[in-house]
Image 1 (tube, rainbow, N blue to C red):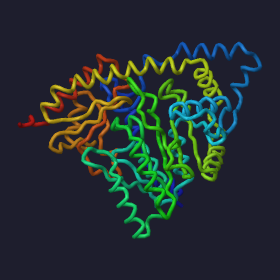
Image 2 (image 1 turned 180 degrees about the vertical axis):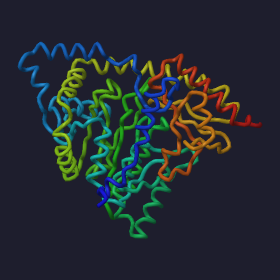
Image 3 (image 1 turned 135 degrees about the horizontal axis):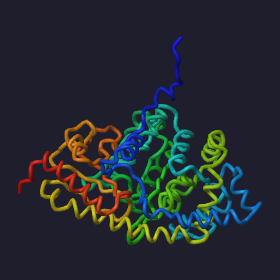
Image 4 (image 1 turned 30 degrees about the vertical axis):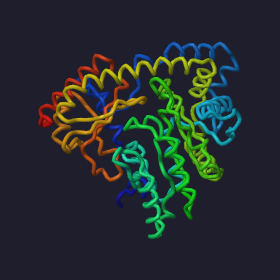
Length: 422
């Protein structure tokens, strides 16, 4: 009798991010502008070594860091995280209920738990266009359906279009299947853009007027990775239209510090949803690694994380400028366009005259032959129909390698693109 899987098991397909990471790691001849790795040279080895040495000197108290921790996460770390959210939102300390915040294995696990406990197969999550492509993979794996939010000609969320979409869903009886709206609200992966406070408030008012509850999932993974100043918009947690509404807010402490520690967090305003996520998390891992949490907690408390972040912002700003400037002249003359972001790890390129850039395109093959790798932009759309966008990550390569990667990319583009005509 043939072996069979569950319906969830059968829905699974290889992760695109896993493939991208594998190519980056296994092909040393290729300069990868694909996987969103962080800057390797800046990883805080000395800080982490200092913290580990300190733990080792504490005897029995230090040994507790090697023991299991609580499912919800270390109390001290949750307090520090809540303080950071409140400070970013310019709200009074103690505004957030610390018992509504849990520590996760990176924000990725938190997103998975949120969808897993909210959606049945066939349920709908509304997403920006473009959006974080790994979140689309989560939805596919769990059987949820992504539907793109209408956008304006400036690629911003079209509030009138969103309202029309929801009105139509209510008319057709599909509104009850729409469980949440997902925002990557600060220096987004992949576009580098941020969602304004006015837009967030507009979304909240629209959702608040519906006959069925639609939650907000706010992914703020890059909120602290700005170059010169933070984006001014408050999170949905602090905005009036969302008071009393189900809001799930998640971010990470390791993307801006040491990504290998994999410590993220989530805050959820809906007690039933929160309890379900913690129950599933308890079944999965009994709680995020206590030792990793201990390291991060002490790094935050001692000011190591913020000191590192200040340095990292300058590093990423310089790297962004290096790649942006190396591409600007030659690509612009060919008709490519993009905007320099004010934070995050990515450039979001639009190819000229609809030139295909998907993984099966001649352009993608030409880049591989030149020895450079990127994320095809069609992965970032719920229906994969837009095939002329590219995400370039400048996080991991040094500045000289970024210039060489840009040279290779331009060589591929010149071979494939007719010069733009005035």
